[in-house]
Image (tube, rainbow, N blue to C red; front, side, top):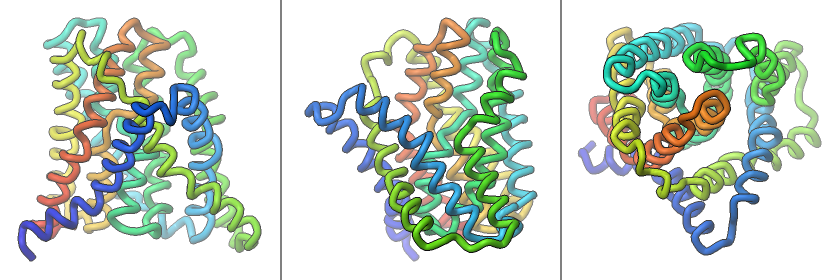
Length: 311
């Protein structure tokens, strides 16, 4: 298989994500969508469509088949090690008040939307359940770490646990796992109805992400934003994948790990940074730059992994 063939295979995975992101930017430019549409669309995806998708994925098969302890454990350890290293690096290179925001944006990826979309494109819809279980555990860890590094939070750890208990994604995965454990089949009417809503998830979410990108804010912290983006898209996922290869992860687990860790910074990083620090603009710039560049860095990573027959 030639290098060009590997490139084509990688573009087949990342290309659709880039095209829908660009479509969202175009729709905003021609005023087909606006900030209000993006706000409502994001709420619809987060509270309804994505939970439906995750519930159906986890409820439709045995939960034990989708629980990969080695993958989840490695992802958690890699995240914690990454956070410690990035925090120390940021502490000695940038102003102290920005360390927490910088660190959060460098490790917190958009797994729920872009990561899931990439996994589906790469491995098909049968991968959703396994990726969803990974997503559930890492989402909890991401939120706990975010509070610890943004230490001036008024709500504290207890507030984050309350938010997690109300998180629609966590609730959907837990309900799906419970349904699976009961061994119940999903009624056809219920499966079809939830399925229609679930199909909104990826295209609507990607359109909203594309429409929300704002290059006008990319000015005050461009050097720090570029540094954090390089860590998020290249350094951290690259090192994690190298270690995972040495540990002998199978191609599917390695693919999930790479695609989840190589995602751009999640919008939630901006929300928490804005609420808990005076440096929300830094988070917005990192999100914008990482989202714009991620299709290219992910394609490059997929080409390498495919060329050397790791995935």
